[in-house]
Image 1 (cartoon, rainbow, N blue to C red):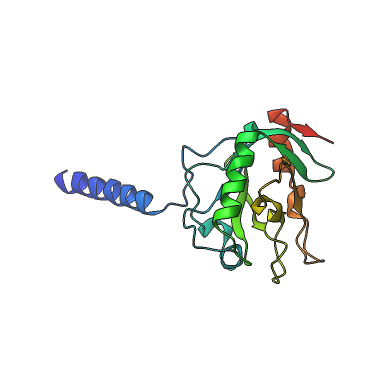
Image 2: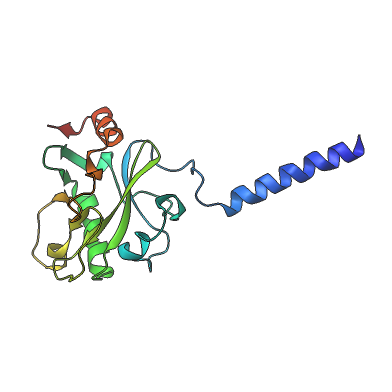
Length: 179
């Protein structure tokens, strides 16, 4: 009986240890609707992230944008309007991390990773292989628009990752989706 108890304790310890080391498990704090998450390692560019499995990327603890930050999401254009507070978050990211390789984000719906995208700058000479949001204007002082558009990947034969039904459903449930 003593060996059995020690064995069970060892298994519980190993599972617990593994779970604390594996940051890719679902975090209870991840938002349960639609959200954009940046990576916890801010030195990783979108081009770097594209070389890895989406599930191996370690995400920031909190979403930078959730459906609560959206005034609307226009599905037919893949564009959305942000609240002022969310718009400022994007401006801060755009100004602080300018790179021709893009700032990666993961689009999530219902705590599921859907696709890798990037905040992108028009001055980049690198062709993006993932959906992008152009944030070039955010580095200008007098830019005030709060409408962003997610552009399709430049790869012609790649499926359009933006049209995932899980995203559509999460946006519908949040009441921000318009056709």
